[in-house]
Amino acid sequence: MNSAWNRLMRKARKPKKMVPQYEETTSNNEVLSSSLTENITKVKDTLGNSGDLVVRDFKMGKPFLCKVASIYINGLTDKEILGNSIIERLMNDVEMVEEESPYEPSQLGTYIKEHILTITNVGEVTNFDKLFLHLLSGETIVLVDGWNQGFACSAQGGDLRAISEPVAESSVRGPRDSFTESLITNTAMIRRRIKSPNLWLETTEMGMITQTGVGMMYVKGIVNDKLLTEIKERLSKMEVDEVQGSNTIEEWITDETWTPWPTVFITERPDVVAGNLLEGRIVIFVNETPTPLIVPATWNQFFQTAEDYYLRWTMASFLRMLRIVSFLITLLGPSLFIAFLSFHPELIPTPLLINLAAQRQSIPFPIIIEALLMEFTFEVLREAGVRMPRPVGQAVSIVGALVLGEAAVSAGIVSSAMVIVVAATAIASFTIPHYAMTDATRLLRFGMMILASFFGLYGIGLGVIMLVAHTCSLRSFGIPYLAPFAPIILADQKDSIFRFPLPFLSKRPRLVSQIKTQRTDDNYNRGPSPREDGMKQHESKRDSDET
Image (cartoon, rainbow, N blue to C red; front, side, top):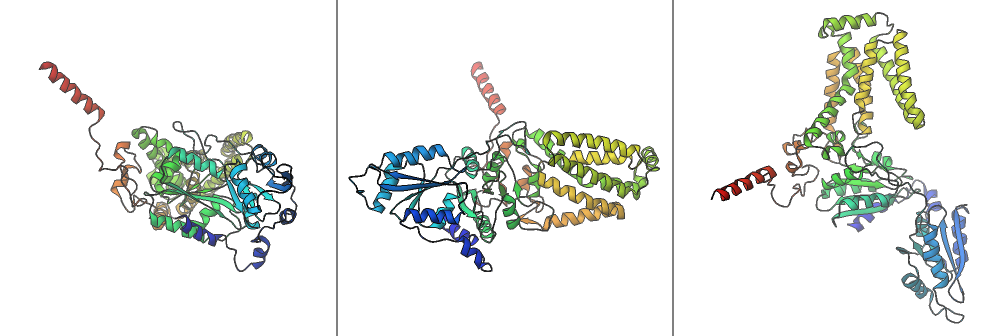
């Protein structure tokens, strides 16, 4: 499996033929020289004698006859590990006899690797291409004079962000850890939750310039092999210079580009990733990105949270229904208000209609202009609150909304009812748990408002039909986006809009994991409940006492 993955990924690292000058300047398969001075000069010239490049020359062994150099990037290496496990060991623990080393260069390299270096991971470097890849990944390169090879010692370090609580996906119950920018740290957090040898991780580097580390994790035996092959093929077709984050991979591998709906699931919670892995999905980690990608994704998945599985099933089902209703209010709230007032006033109760008409007597703009003005103003306030410093941003959002809303009503620019509708719509949008779905709903809301201003309820109906038809046509790596609603899968309805009790969730999503859909080894048999067992024991004890 790893060899197939490497063959596919080799295509992604191959430069395009249309830019041969890039290959000449970046690809360097030249083998290392046996001269230490030439190797150091080559490294310095290639990196432009960068200020963060550190070359430490010293002599190895007693009586110090062999020249050695350690090369590393300042800020990417743990200097304590470098000093204790590499430099100190080479300077003091290598035994030299008389004036000559008792070892040939290759034998000396083997001796150093097997007896001297106490670092956890030591790899051999034979050419400059591998040397720069390991060096710029934070590893320390050790070169020995007279030997045309070197060592790449795993001594990565530097300042990294510690594990903290989730920011965008907080919960009352459940774990409080979230992913960081370290690929190894993120995968280790999943290993702690899934202690199975079937949890496989395949890593590679993507981006011809950035050489960003990318890891693909899945559970062997549960994941669909066709899905796995499809993802590898899509990743192999990526010919890009840079991979700055998971969003780059998301836009390259997504099924449909021209759609407002997110077809790749993004999360910052390790427990969500672990749950999706156990359902047969595949997770793509990107180094320096705390939000991995989960594929395939369905529409229903964006309205579920990790807390749904930590609460009782009754409360979890109620919250899911609440999110769906809030989604409909966010999408259709302003457009329904426009349609009722402009085209269908007979559907509004008479006392309310009189109040609304009285409010609109002093408004100089049509209702669609009024609605667009208020929605645009609120979006500006939302964006300002996000981009400004956190202590100031919250105050600006709250005070700005209150002051502008009250001032606009007092000046007769907008009506009080419109302010209420826009505020209710904004509050309802905050209940959608995932930001990507919130953004899509915010964009679609403007389209619904325009259709309502031209055709009333008929325009809203037309927009809903077009939106549903478009959503039904979407696929996420071959999985229908609206599953399990279209097509209807009765077995998967237990964990869709409603969440059944966990003992009833005995099967994985059928279209995602087609190999092992059963969560248990045997056929599902719930058996008697603890209350029934207690009643039977009480009856048997009573019968024995009577006897």
